[in-house]
Image 1 (cartoon, rainbow over the protein chains, first blue to last red):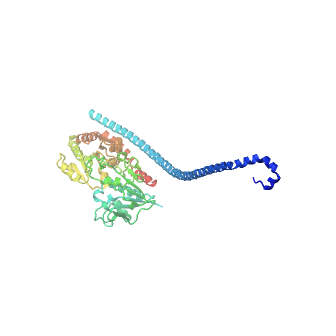
Image 2: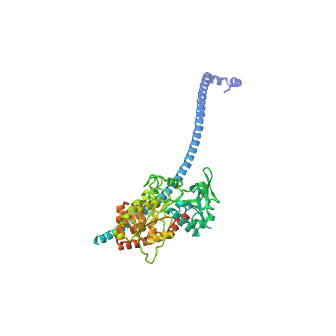
Image 3: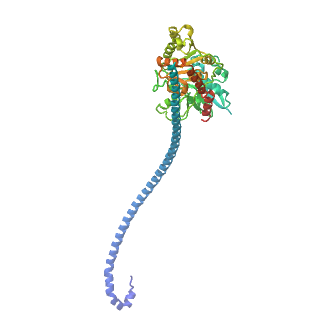
Length: 138
Length: 368
């Protein structure tokens, strides 16, 4: 606050009346200003520290973004790989089913053939036995 | 448009093998497929299995092959390890069938579908019933791509042998039992003969069969019977030597070789018993041929003889001269038994026609 000389002359009594206040102001104002300066310095330090922290976090954020991007690519690659493997496994499953079917058919045929051989041998042996019996009678 | 069928029948051009059972199968298939309008047949000869002086335009080959000599393709080596098929090569949509030898390389068969007949695995070292000195079976197996080639086997006996080899459990296989076109004589031909087919090889039991037959025919009861030996290779001379020193008089035996189908039909037709002593075969075609001609059959009991002969055979429990002799004696001494075996055999032979075998093979080739 600026007090003009005119004001002081014209209002001396007022000024005198106000002098304790002025004295107080004059006395405490520099002190107050000093405190403000200290406060500003402190705030400046805080701001500097926060700027450093933000800068650091910005770096971290960029790294995280890069990491996320790499992770995304890896996930995509793995997804393609898994899809390929699933497709391969499905194909393999189909082949296994076909092989199993063929194997089952072969087993059924072999069992049938074995039974047929047993029946054939039974017939052959019966005929042979009958012939041997006739031979014994003769 | 007909499907082109390249069919490897190299054995028909090898004089020493022309009368073998395997060559007969190649001949029958060639003849059948050539009459099948589904296929345009192209016979193939692999020169590396023929003599160096073989000339397809001049050499005597085989009656069936001679008829289509103009279509014969030859697979020849043009430089070390490099073979070409001339005059043309198989294309996509064609089929290449090998009837007995290894499949040629993919460089020869190209994108054609491939099939091969594996007759038996008798000479495979892992399954050998006798000395494994014939590596052709290893070449045959090496030439097969298990994933894509079709392997045709003539019996479940051979299929089981094949599938028992490590890695061959999933082989793409088809059982196609062979057949015969032989037809028995009618008019009640007199059956006084004893016939046997003798081939070299320990499992063929030729000597045991000769000893058994000599023993039986020396018996007074069987004086009216004579013996015909149909022999191949060195068994011709060995049989003659044995019989000259036997108790049988010269007039009671004959050794025949290089005979025609018609002559073989006649021999079967007058047989009171046909003796097939082999311990093991991939199929056993002579049993079916004897059946078709009404000849009662005595055979050594084995997986293959039982599969082919069924209940229509008098089985010898072992290939010993004693067991074979007892079976032959039993058949010759009992008219009713002979009649039963003859009748059952003819019925069974009807299940083994070339028509049904070739039709089944044809279907398998078309569906590839």
